[in-house]
Amino acid sequence: MRKGIRFHSGLGGTYNEKHMVLTLEEEALLKVVRALPPEEANKVLTWASQLAALAQGRLTDWSDSWSDEDLRDAAAASLHEFETQESGER
Image 1 (tube, rainbow, N blue to C red):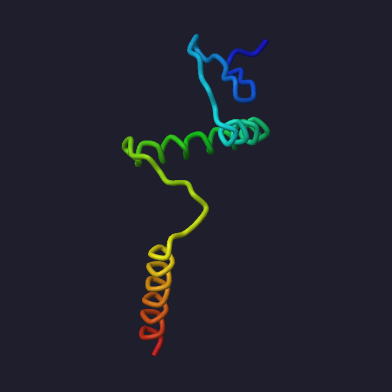
Image 2: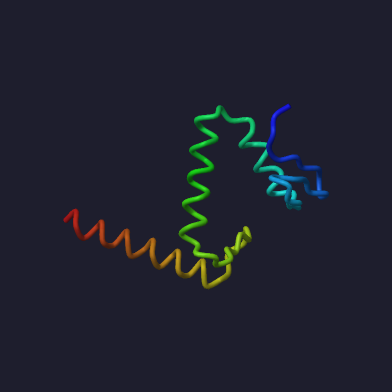
């Protein structure tokens, strides 16, 4: 039997003798990573580790909705980039 993480929906599991509880999103991510070929799964895990290091312990807001301020900022940045490209082409 393969050693590693055992999880049950909402109940958690064990890893190196530690109890872990996962969210449904985390469980879904694990399912996807387990389905990948080993080399690709390693790339995903390396990328996730790099992102975690960049966060330096800060929480990330993963909400799917954008605030009005987010939309204004994105529109302004897009317009600025467009104007920069247009002025460079003339």
